[in-house]
Structure formats: structure tokens, C-alpha cells
Amino acid sequence: MSGRAQLMWDEAVTGYDFGPEHPMDPVRLALTRSLVRAFGLDRDVEVVAAKPAGESTLRLVHREDYIEAVKAASENPGAADGAYGIGTLDDPAFAGMHEVSALIAGQSVGAAEAVWRGDALHAVNFAGGLHHAMPGGASGFCIYNDASLAIARLLELGVERVAYVDVDVHHGDGVQAAFWEDPRVLTISLHEHPRTLFPQTGWAEETGADGAAEGSAVNVALPAGTGDAGWLRAFHAVVPELLAEFRPQVLVTQHGADTHFEDPLAHLAVSLDAQRAVQVACHELAHSYAEGRWVALGGGGYAVVEVVPRSWTHLVGIAAGRELAPKSVVPESWRQEVFARTRQLAPMRMTDGRWPVEWAGWEAGYDPADRLDQAVLATRRAVFPLRGLLA
Image 1 (spheres, rainbow, N blue to C red):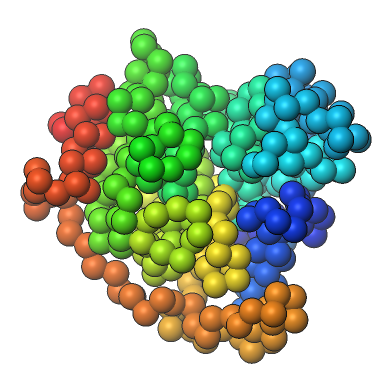
Image 2: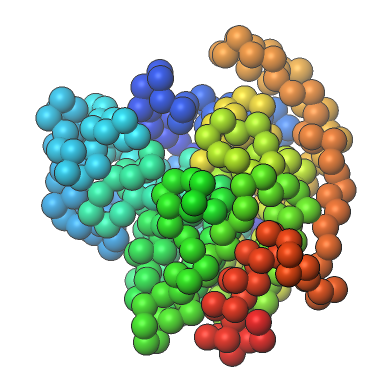
């Protein structure tokens, strides 16, 4: 197996553009790619442009009638069929949407194929992580669910156990739905509580279909306002034990940057430094339990200058084996590009000043009156016994 990491990138993914008023500004992708390049990380990764996902691949997850509806809206946005979630405020139709959505999906599928076949040990597609798309409909800024497609492709290639860990602020509902009845896939999502955030799913009691898949869906619903210490405490109180029991052959992770305290669409209070800490943890978990096979995806994130590029550049550096120190100075050339593109001032360093992030481990005990601990305990009680673990 190659130890080299792959960065999946095709400039055309920046065409995933819902319009100037939409929060999912594709400049976040372009600026991330530029920051990766500015730090010289291209020397440490193999930059690969995979082909778009074809219809047979898309059908591994999506219904044929939905694919046809996306293609029709792609050719004629004004005739988008709202019954499929296209042409809405969240998911406006735009010309070429099928092609660019399939291209993003293809990067994640290509990443999964490279990791499983041994062409790379780690692969990153920060344009991916579009985890809300359902088999028969668009949802939450997501047209095709590239994360689900990557996992489905791994199963098609013969992988017997895939773990999916989603730390986006929103519940990874589309991936959970795709594999609700499949015990070969363990889905774990840490997200803001459904009482206060879209998509209003992801309760601790959602544990997978009755029967063999029961206990294969895991949800940690975090109270609004959760910060670094609580977020990391919840992650480490749930994820490592489950992965140790499941022993995945491949680890797929989704790193939406919208948990950040500056994100305009959610209510957690996580720093860039805590996001980096979870990225490091996912890398270590892949080596501990999946022989290093790691597919890392992007996701949400709407502080498109201040947060997203730095967070995902850290992710690329970790996957590439060249972690960027939090105190690293952001290259001046990139800061100039940011101002030229957005008329915003770019951050100066690759940190929010909170490194190293401190948190208390679950093994030391919990506080039954603490809302964060209540959330963790609800998840452990709902899922751990189903997997033969102590809650």
C-alpha cells in the first residue's frame, strides 16, 4: 500500500454554485485550494482529478427518477420539480447542476477506490461531504450524497465494514438513511441538537433498523452553545470505543466546519483548534482500527473566509503527514488573494489561539446535571448495549 495521500481536486467543482445570495459560496473551495497550495502541501500529496460519478454509480444510492429530475433541472432550471427538493430556497436549480454534482461525487468515490485498492493510504475531498441528499431528493444544499456513494462503492468492491464519522454541526441524515438497514456500515454523527437546528433529526434513540442493523446508527445530539471542551469530550466518549468494537476496514469522516463559533447558520461554539484536534484524532483512529485507510471529506461551513479554508487546509496537512502548527503564519500571498476575491481581511495565523485544547475524559466520571454529559449518556445508553459495550 502506498503511504502517499491523495487530494481530490478538479477546478470545475467550484461550479457548484447556488447563486450570489446563497450561503454556500463556492469561493470557500477555491480559497481552500489556494491555501493548501500556498503552504506548499502539493509537495506532500498527489493531486488527482477523478472522473464524474456515472449513472450506474449514482444509482448505488439515488433513485433513477431522482437522477432524471436532477438532469432535467440541470438542462432547464426554470422547470425544476420541487417534489424532488430541487428549485427550493435551500437547493435552487442551476444550469449544469447534475454535471458538477456528479463531479463532486466522483471525487469522493475516487478517493474511496484509491484507499481501498492501496493507491493511497489517505484521501481527501474537501469539496465533498454533502451528507443531506436523500436517495430520492435534494436537501440542505446537497444534490448527490457523495459520502453515501463513496461508502456504497466500498461495499460494492467487497469491503465488509465501513465506519462513517460525521462532525458537521448538522446531523448526517442522508448517510444514516442510506445505510439504516445495513449492519456493514456504522454511522456516527455528532451534531447540534435537533430541537434547535436543521434537519431536526439525529436523536440518540435513532439507532438503526430493527434486526441485524440495530445499533449501527449512532447520534450524539449536542446542546446549543457547546464549546471546545464539551465537543471533544463527547467525541472521545463515544467514537473510539465504538470503532474499537466495530473494527472498520475503512474509516470515512466528514469534517463540516460549521461547528465554529463564527458560523452564521448554527449555534455551537467550537474553535478552529478543536476542529484540528478532531481531525488529528480521526487520523489516529484510522491507523488504530482501519489499518490507516482514511477517506476525509469536507461538508458545511459558511464562514467562508475566516474559518473554512484554514480548517480544511489543516485536514489536508494531517492527511499528507505534514501537520501545520497552529501558530503557523498564513502566507501573505493568500491573504492578498482573499482580499482581491472578497474584499475581506484574511486571518493571520492557523489558530484561534486556543491550542492546545483541554477537555476532560469520560473515564473520570460524569455529571448527571450537566447538559453535555446528559447528551453523551443518552447516546451511550441507547447504542452501547446493542453493541455489547457498557453504557
